[in-house]
Length: 241
Image (cartoon, rainbow, N blue to C red; front, side):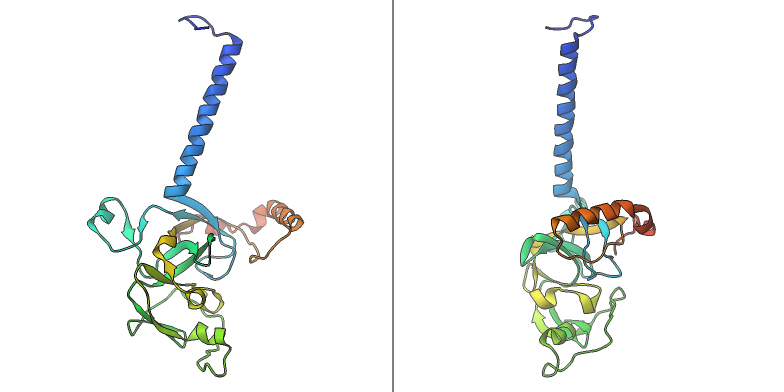
């Protein structure tokens, strides 16, 4: 039944209109959320200490998926607020050995670079680079491949290698406790997701480990009960650089 001007809609018709409006609002909200998380920004949590102390275990990050554009810089980048990936950018990417898992590391080597690590010092095209953000928790340097464990030697001494086109060499800031390109290789350009902008919530989580169903429930209960005293309030909106 059509409602004429000045008439009060019947209860059933008013209810149908409310349900329709609610449904449309829900659909629009879902579409908007999917668009934003797919193309603009996406939240992620950090479960390992490989980027400590730039990024802590338990930091929840907002990841910018819009402004980073892999490849050479062009006039379109400044026009559309895009820019190319630069050395020492912190980047979120798909782990090459399991693309369903997001990783966060720092870009150390760009396409075409010759990279070498000598006694923990990174050389790019034969020249040492300044890295004020990095930290070493192990004072030992493993410089002899005959006496060191292979992984320890590879941690402190690596290359020289030339980084392929459309690929990047990633390293964690916590250099002595980071599984990165030294151990699993280059990150293809197609695996780049974006760059973390800031911390929107930081909680004192333990480093990641496999949990069964009951442990997972207990973990969420623990976070709820300790939300106030284990939240790192001073890290809220902390910018990632």
